[in-house]
Image 1 (tube, protein in one colour):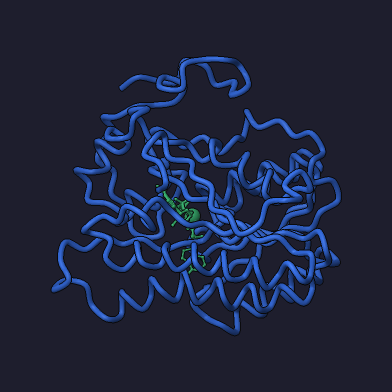
Image 2: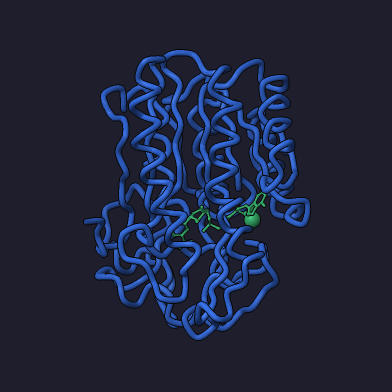
Length: 302
Ligand code: NAD
Ligand code: MG
């Protein structure tokens, strides 16, 4: 397995060899999985993301902020000057502790609020606690998601189908509904779709439609929220090296070759998604709303 040629993401270099390429080792974990246990460890920008004050003073809630793309967004938001609350499941406290310790040591305000987003009452409580902790809410980054593959519709039970929709779609609705009354003009919502919304895999019969729903939700809400001066956009990643995949998101034989089929020949790293979350949350995106941005290594949105 090749290793990163250059961990400075600001240095010009060949994107194909910038980060690890397949083959990877099999590495099963129980869901939701820990970034801590992955080989190689994902790059969430811990040592590499530099901020420039683009979110100075903003108050942000990032779901799924313990690991993967959410951790990368949380680190980037904090380095850009935001105060951040991260949400995650209680079983992910070890991953959350890593990002909280890292950002606190740098002098950022970061608070962890664990809890299950499948529960509507908890979604309301999370928003209320965030507003209390930070004194407001300017950015809602909905990054949490559930992905469990199943080979055929016969194996996909109703419980699992509902859990995927509750986590990926219902929680998005509950959190957004609770958050919007607190958000001033200039605030931004950034959702997390997927290339699966457009090019669904046969083994993701529940997950792929949740991501299509997120694209449509983003567009419809953007039209409504424009009246309040709130922008709503989505990021749609292709394969990204996060614990979602080895913890049941893919069969292990697909984890081994994860990212091989994209034109750039490797999976993305969480840090490579962070600049889009920052842009869409920041005032630099003042004329951008209702859009879905791909970060796919070349597999392309339609
Ligand atoms: P990840 O496992 O690091 O993050 C997913 C997070 O979702 C977990 O850390 C967990 O905190 C949270 N979560 C799941 N169920 C929850 C629940 N019931 N309550 C509270 N939190 C819950 O993996 P990731 O790949 O960084 O995933 C982040 C987002 O990116 C997801 O929405 C995923 O669908 C999306 N995405 C990932 C990829 C990829 O290849 N990794 C590709 C496209 C889209
Ligand atoms: Mg996690």
